[in-house]
Image 1 (cartoon, rainbow, N blue to C red):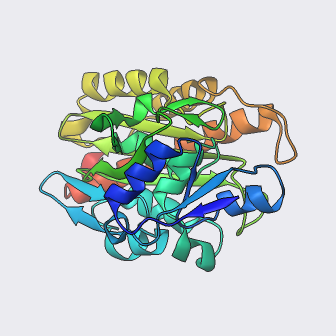
Image 2: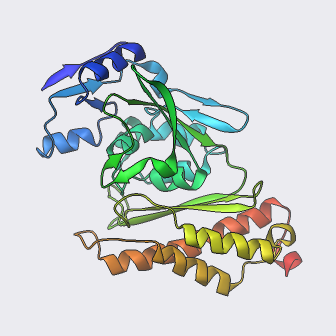
Length: 298
């Protein structure tokens, strides 16, 4: 196994163009596990740690340009207001040591359905900026990024340059079920984001299908229910029937498997429970942010 260590982004693109099978490594929290267990033996490793801009972020007027190597700890400490859903998900990633090393780029590059960042990226509506030496830069909408089990939309000579994530314009939540409280791969996970500016809701589901997915039927139902009932304007409490139907549709979006962490039936059930809970949490936060109380909206 050869170790490539470019000193700049341009050198990294050149190395990837020359060695398309080279596996990028930054935090290494996923790649090294696979290598240590002999699940993967790449011909080349492409070390990106000398490229400082990949570990930086920029907060714009409407979005955050997040470097793929920004550690989860930095997201928790610095971007909680702009990216609350991703910050919550970052709290659940493994251990403090791994949160200090791992970043969103690793989740995207590995494209495991159990990656903790995926539900929040989906519910936020992120875009992945990638680049190759031959074709230049392109933006891949997050909905088009996941292509199969641990497969993404990257071409062989492309590298992830940044992730563009819209700044939160409403409450966001993330929930995860695991077999213990720390150092755990998700049995299943659910992300939810309210977007009051467009009066829409987006979701993200992890570890309950071959790829990270959205519960689109649940979103469409809830968007219609909130609009028809005037909920965005009147701040009423979401009725139990709406929450129940949303949960059932979210559960129905899943296509899980039985494995050592949980059964398919359990995953479907758990996603429904998380969908209902995150909906109630985010909606109560939305009502509170708009100066409404339970008594005043009753």
